[in-house]
Length: 247
Image (tube, rainbow, N blue to C red; front, side):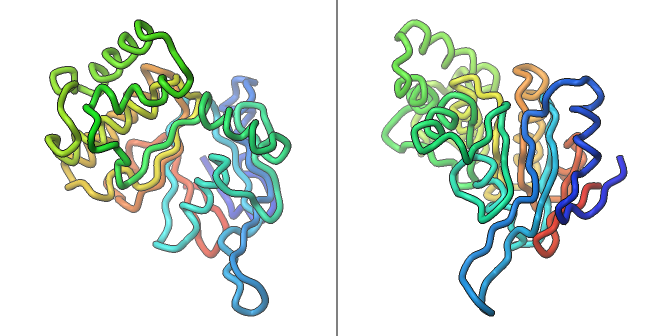
């Protein structure tokens, strides 16, 4: 799929209306700009970035350290506000949602996975996975069924009662993946999810994300610096000097 720099233009012309299906893309980014600081010392993290992510795709985001990958993920996930441009997730433009709307979107439609795992040490694996369900006040029976299903999906059914400190790094990241899926999100955002893992374990986690795309039809945007893992993505977007190219 041919790509070009995205300095204000679209990549792949709306991604062929979501890969030729006519379906609305899960993510539509147009002319996104974000800077830090002012004057000559300003850092332009993003310079008019535009792209689409069709539903059900795993898209990898690559770039050197400090290239703006995390900034872009935060903007797509509604954790930060751009200086200009727009982000539409699941048909909703983030700038028009307000803080309450963004909170609901992040709770119900977006799952996050971070390099640091972010698990609660005093809770078991099952309890960690169940946290999002408790926050939305799901019934106990529904919560237990969903947690059991997710732990089975990530291969940790036999570790439900163990706390994070009793699990390996790869197992902890699998718990984090299960937790991110608890509320059946439409979009999964992962920021260097294999950064603290060895190569073999990191590959296993990426293969898990690939399987999740198929089994739960989740759209995944994952930032990674590991070139070995990029081959598992449907597409690769590269950030360079605040602009985006597609490979």
